[in-house]
Length: 293
Image 1 (cartoon, rainbow, N blue to C red):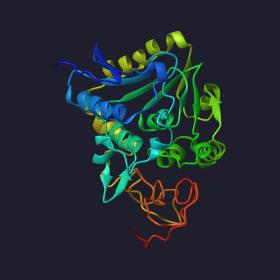
Image 2: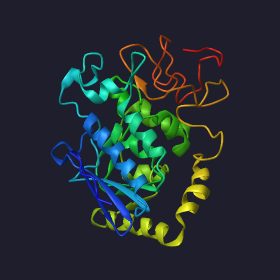
Image 3: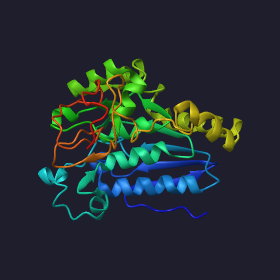
Image 4: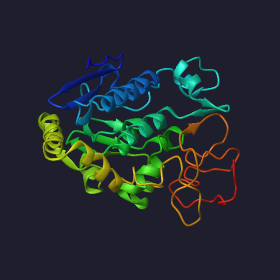
């Protein structure tokens, strides 16, 4: 099938492996609403293409993704007055859905295994988008940062649902409370990434993993047998947008991808609640299970 073209991405398929390259190297591949819609469309394309057995996501130039493009200054998060069609489309009952969250949920639903080949700095949405991917392989030159607290905003893209499941609550809290940028070695030591690679070998090693998966497994097995391991296709399995608030759980309510000018918990989506950075998100929920939006 013909390959799609995108404004902010490079897309190619070779030998059964689709490679999605974030392509704004002059901005360290900073994330925009256009990139969000392009990436969602790219994953639609990989799902629809029977010739694709696995997907690699990487960045052009020296960075993976530097987070949200802040070149618009204060208007970056001025959702109410934005005329961006992608943002207007994402408004649900007057509440703005988080663009990074829309992307991570699409990646989470991918029918093909997804490998992040992290070639350089990955902060903000640049790291949270990886959490829904199946494997994270990093260059030794990569750096990571959940920098939201240093910007005065909450963790987004369903990251406070995914991150504790990957590295544990204590590490997730440390990285998010401090907002510091940390090296690839720490990401490997804490289990965020699968393996470390020399920069020049990263893509080849990612392709080798994809090749091993494709060559040794049937497509139906990859989906029906391996996805339940990640809690994806099992009937009734919890999803980022359906994890209910509970004082006995580290998860909370729905949906986790809405943001806006009102005080909204980034995971539970509860409006008007007195929320702190991790209220009902990474820490135990302070919401009673019976309290609705």
